[in-house]
Length: 216
Image 1 (cartoon, rainbow, N blue to C red):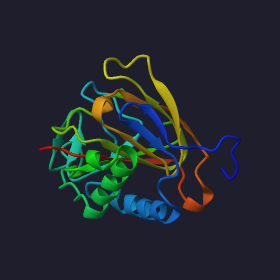
Image 2 (image 1 turned 60 degrees about the vertical axis):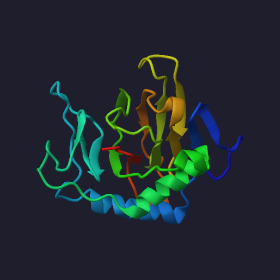
Image 3 (image 1 turned 180 degrees about the vertical axis):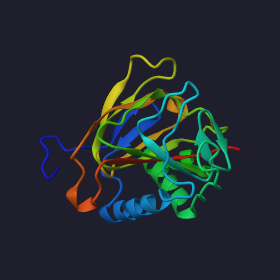
């Protein structure tokens, strides 16, 4: 938006969980979108994730570095085309470390060798249930970049999927980082607002690029 009654500012949602609006500048947003489009191509491209119970996630996903499937990591797309997962680029890891430094300070970024990206694409009807990012062997902060449509991001507590939680509006270019006491907090996306992506980006839907340290 060009004008705001109350301009958006950096907010600590919970201890160790920080939202920074518009952290990605215009050039970085375009570069990330172009990269996501390449990563989404087969082999090891964008896929529908199937849960052990036989259901499917409504957000589609592609992975870099290691392939995530419920609830483990692999070197190949074991629940898809079987191809070797695409490599995790050094520049993306550096972007992640800069994001953690800005959100939580330099100490939080020390030793954070990001090596996994989970990229989720949400169309107008996609959602993400409350879950924890707990399949890694590292406690390094999780870094989340948003592109395209605005969503409601629900950030909860470490004990239960239920309240207390805080709903945060994530727009294109926003950064969300959670680590420390909030590293294993439940979180999800109950709603996407279709048609809210900046027209100049040329994206219909929402992309979420999530960086993690595997510790594997």
